[in-house]
Length: 105
Image (tube, rainbow, N blue to C red; front, side, top):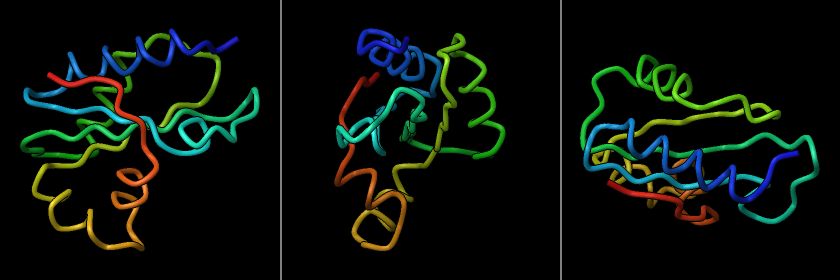
């Protein structure tokens, strides 16, 4: 069973593995409080600069232990947060609005 401590630990692991400085937010149904037992985990990792988002997403996801539910790790740069954060139709906007801060480096 996924616990709050496991979610917080995953956030700390992602922050430690990400390029510094980095911030990690939990978003989606688990951040909103509408999750069920099998709901996935959605993490937004904000890094100063990202060369390859796909490579970084895979690398960070691989740092996590099995959590018993699907996990999505979305990686964005600070510049992308500045551009997309204010735009209501974007994932970044939604994650910033509903997300819950977990960790930073």
